[in-house]
Length: 477
Image (tube, rainbow, N blue to C red; front, side, top):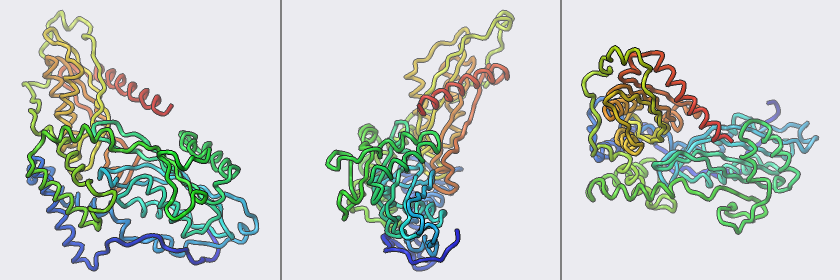
């Protein structure tokens, strides 16, 4: 984009933490790693076992990455990428909309990731436009902090306005919020200011966004009418009048419902001394990344996270399923070989577990199918759900989790045939590092007849995945 650079506006960002030298950073990483070791041993794990040896180092790096936004400023991100375009100045009224900017942030309430995408539109003033890549960089900088989705939305519009000085701006944030023991759900928050408070400008923005792809119509629905600022779940920016900026969002919190269950379960896990040690470790992590655990919004978060961690790793106190002899089914009789395979049972169970490499959640569905032999018996759904809970509520990797569930199903159903397909989204793929939001992982495990008969296994996998596809289509509708 051509043109001459112009000076940016007032910087809204505050550097909370800035390592003075490489030595300081190394010392910070060392202290973070020690706190992570306390968490690992506190839940009953062996920090020296394979799979966990380098976990403290990886988790420390992940926390520094998740808080890197504190160590940057909007001015440094924008740099000289503000341009004055005479043609735009002489032809006012053209909107600029940047869609589908992915982000990942951390909830200050639960200390769990929330992630999704932003849509930002603005009307340039005096022909000044921002280099498009800088929009994504501003989003990334502001996301790498501990906050609520609503504050993230507000900070994004405030920062953009201060740096670019447009005639008006609108922001929509669609975020997946994790909740203990439940499926991730999407919250939509939005903010608008300046000329976007006028209905005709908003209608143009909504029209362009609605027809830009699937799901956009739902995202803009909350902006179609000006919100009642006195209503619950509606906030306007601090320091501005209600006429300047309006923010609308879903009033539901990512931790309200599941946290109560989590706290009840955590009361039975560990002792007071264990909980205190774990809470101290979380407080140390927050201080090392430059946060104040006593500030409004973070006060009590360490305790909530510890209760979540204890409840979500309660599987260590329960017996794991073991393989009973061979993975193959008993040799069928001549009559059984000639007969059709027994009727298959298939079930679909939601789960959430913790990646042992980064101590971040992964969640999804376990698809279970089993065949009953002559001595087999049906297993109640509640018992299979309990099996999945036992296997998943510990530091895990998806590949091992799938095999352990297959062992349990094979044993519980009488050992004729068991098939498990596990599909999950991993926060270590979404909220750190490569940040591939659309990525998911599928793992399978087969026992007995499903292991021995390729055609039978393929047929059932198609059936299981068809159920998943239909569920996703219903969710979109």
